[in-house]
Each structure stands twice: as C-alpha cells, then as structure tokens.
Length: 201
Image (cartoon, rainbow, N blue to C red):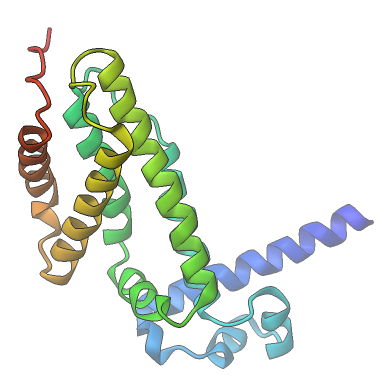
C-alpha cells in the first residue's frame, strides 16, 4: 500500500510540474499564478504547496534536471579536446534555448529564490567538474601543456561559457553560439599557451 501511495504522490507532483511548465511557456511565467496551475489540474492550492513551496521551485527543478541531463549525455566520438569543450558548453545552453521563457524567468527569479540558487550551484559545480575532467584528460594525452593549472583553466572556460550563453540568449543569437564558442576557446587556447592539437586521423 505504501508503494502505491508513494507512486500516486509522485505522479501528482509530476503532473503539477508538467502543468506549471506548460502554462509558463504558453502564457509567460509572470502571468501564471499558483491558482491557475491548481485550476488546470482541479486540485486545491494546499495540494500544490505540499509539493512545491512556490511556483519558482518548478523553474529550479526544470533548470537542474535539464542541465544535469545534458552533462550526463555521451559526446560523439572523434572530437578534439577543444571540440569536446565546445560540445559540452553548447549542449546545455542549446537545451535551455529550447525554452526561452523558462530560461528568462529562471534568471529573473534567481536573485530572490533559494531553490534556484541552490540548483545553479549544483549545476555550476557539476559543469566545472566536467570541464576539469576534459582539460585534465587533454593534458594527460599531451595535447595541452601541463604547466597551465587545470582548475584555473576550468574556471576560465566556465566563465566564458556562461558569458557567451547569456550574450546569445539576450541578443536572440542562439544560432551563433557554436561559432562564438569556437572562436573564444581558440583565443583562450592561445592565451593559455596550449599547444596545437594534432591533426585528426
């Protein structure tokens, strides 16, 4: 019985989450109230608050789920170290760009919503760890110079990634993201004295 009750509870939570995201995208986050979500599902407001403290917590879950799935995805084979970094950076941003209203609302709510700040911290930590793994792997393969501190380089790449995606989202230039990332990482490669990558076979 407990298992069935838990499944029903989880199904209801998922229904609230899905309805919230659909309404945010359809009507705009600011125009959607908790009352609208509960009317859509024909549930009481108290039921909503049993699962989410407020509507911004739905954004927090969307952001973390989307970004973590992107980081966990396998990369195509045959990529150079720089191409792997570009792909890592591009894939998460590209997923977020599919839902621009959710991305905008997440950023707007982040300064006043603890759950979004916590989600951003966890995503940033996982993203930096992913970049660091890629950089250390390239150094071990003697593709990149080993006298550049890998953790410092990971910090720089993470900052470059965040700034580039913020720029293209604000300017509505998502289609330019990959070329901008390629160009900026190539510049960083030169500044950090990373040796030229061997030709692909």
